[in-house]
Amino acid sequence: MDLPAGPPPGNDPTAADGAETPMFRLATLDDAPEMLRVLEAAFERWPEFDIDVTPLAHLQWKMSSPVDGLLPHTVGTLDGQVIAAAIRWASYVHVDGRVLSTSSGADQAIHPDYQGRGFAALQRAGRLKLDVFGELGMGTESRHERLVNSRQRRPESRRARQELVSWTYNFDRRGALGTGYRSGGILGAASALVSTLRPRRPHAGGPDPATEPTVMPIAHFDEQADRLWELAREQFDVARVRNAAYLNWRYADPRSGRSQIFGVFEDDPDSARLAGYSVLRLSDDYASLADLLVEPGRENVAAALVRASVAHARELGCRRVVAWLPTLHPLAATLATEGFVDGGVGALMSFHQLRGSTAPVDLEWFRDPARRLHVTLGDHDFV
Image (cartoon, rainbow, N blue to C red; front, top):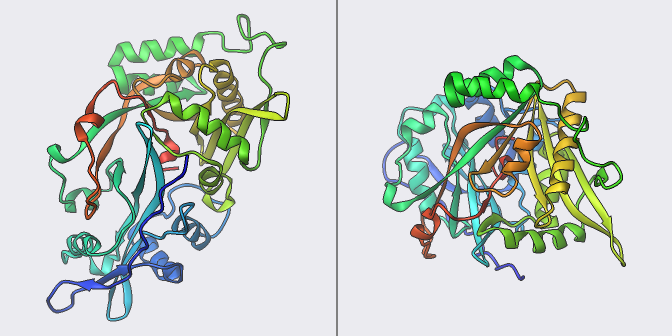
């Protein structure tokens, strides 16, 4: 399937009238050092998870794009100094057999010295006048207090929401009790505790070693990932395009964060076929099952990948593994079988027409609770 060409980004600066008003324009990689200065001043910790490279290298990765080199980021300048930065991810999304362009919001900040002057509203207004990439908006809203308080929220009529379930695998009973109680009170805590007492694979009742898929670490994705995506996408109505170019940018680039990628390869007449992969992102004392994709109907491959990811997290001393999946995802039962506890709604996924875009977006179609979505933690910049 051919991917559509994105519109060339414009770079005409725009500013509202008035004294001491910032000018907003599209950012380039040359702006990264000054943008980093704003981010580090605005947040207690940036990035919020562990990385093995410098913050500048991580920002340069985040500002790069697997989509035609597009950079849909903006900066605000005042007296020649960068005082505001907004970063967006450009990618493509599979929607009901079509491919739409999207740019999802990531980091947004105003330098603390310039906060409280209404510049955030000007930043949003300025971006509307710039040629920013994307047709469909998709993502979760920021939970940062300053952004929540300053955001001009879209009316409910102009967005569609779908629930994402938060799943947790706890390595200790105390963590399981906390997860269960937050999602279901006393009954939830009791159910979570029972889950930690069940024999877990590969104990009695586990898979037959003779037929168990072989899981192996992989360093990068190739054309086998493209083939897997072509097969797997048919299971879903909505999913970010997970071809090799996107996966290598998102997970295999060491600047993106600490990743452990696992794959299951099976022999066919011509080559070893990638039947599925998982991505574990590591930070502090926990791990995130950032992505999981398998051939349709291959729950055994998914289970093997989940077990390998959990075992690796345990070896590293993590206290828990977290994952997000939509409510109707076909692999939710696999997570439950492998010892993950349903922690309830973890986030609300929002779909909307991007501001400034004229592409039609059928929100009623996205609101249908029967829509088959593939959304994971790795679709967001939390991990």
